[in-house]
Amino acid sequence: MSETAAQWAATLRARAEIDLAALEANVRVLRERAPGAALMAVVKSDAYGHGATPCARAAVAAGATWLGTATPQEALALRAEAGLPDDVRIMCWLWTPGGPWREAIEADLDVSVSGMWALEEVVEAARRAGRPARVQLKADTGLGRNGCQPGDDWAELVREALRAEGEGLLRVTGLWSHFACADEPGHPSITAQLTRFREMTAYAEEQGVRPEVRHIANSPALLTLPEAHFDLVRAGIAVYGISPSPELGTPADFGLRPVMTLSASLALVKDVPGGHGVSYGHHYTTPGATTLGLVPLGYADGIPRHASSAGPVLVEGKWRTVAGRIAMDQFVVDLGGDRPAPGAEAVLFGPGDRGEPTAEDWAQAAGTIAYEIVTRIGSRVPRVYRNERQALGRHPAR
Ligand SMILES: *Cc1c(COP(=O)(O)O)cnc(C)c1O
Image (cartoon, rainbow, N blue to C red):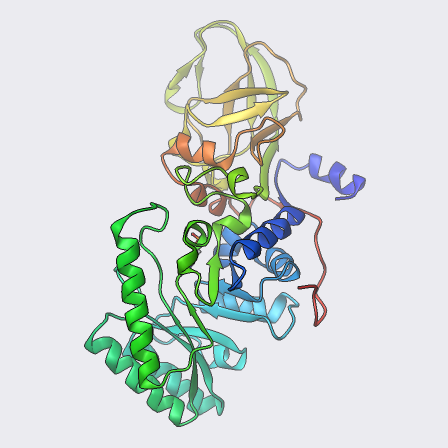
């Protein structure tokens, strides 16, 4: 960020700074941890709140050859607007009947199919488009969410996919699945899912499927389970420099650096007497004469209301705690007699190396996971990008 950009950012009510050099370094670290596999950067839900297009470009520049989204709309937008090289593969997996199959085929997306209704729709769309779809068959190896059940359902899906492949209507580009408990090392479901995945992929391959990629690993599996890497690893939260779970380790333990720093400019600093109730419901009362700082961020911006009286904020080198309720647009911190100037920076979370709290600290304060903290930061908070790349040429450094 240039000096003028930094000055501009400081005049904003609040800002989420996104350090794309950190994101690129994270992608390189993750590639080194899974040297035998290609890397898919998962950029669903606006790149977990970090901004899909700039994050996708940075991830590709750092060597991600695949991008993943949940919805087809997210994937189509990336293909149309992100200025990515044509050979970057984009996969999306959350389809509902009547979805934009034909647009997906024409945009060269890899689409996930978990059941017969989806296979029938994609085949029909391929017929109309006059070109084959790239289809990845998803197996439910034990998550109990999306994916095809083993046994007869899988046999039927594989058989019908091969029949359509024989007619030139699709190509089965991948066989894949998703873990339930990869963030709990030693959980018995992990080996059970791996066994089932090997069985289901082996069955499909015996029947004649020739997938380009087989994949099951998310961030925790990428970081802790080399035997789960197969041909492709799908990294989401780790790309953004956050540990999948505090029990697994800190970001630094894995060589990762948090990408997002959320801060605001204090809107007011004032003296109040002791015994003063603070914010809706008066859940906080000043214990004595003190100063209060008004932080202009609230639950409309994604600050969890469950972190009322608990969330940490760094102001002028000291940790302060949310005083009372977090409201829609603002909350208050007790500054204990300190008098920072209005406009002084209040840092909610960041990498932690300037002494600020982290998204993990907010997750603990709110009884949730850090994934939810960053992903929910709302569109009213401007994203300020550092170290941003412009549209990529055809051959980024890999
Ligand atoms: C979100 C998602 C991922 C990424 O998970 P992380 O734990 O963030 O790495 C991978 N695969 C699928 C199917 C997902 O929905």
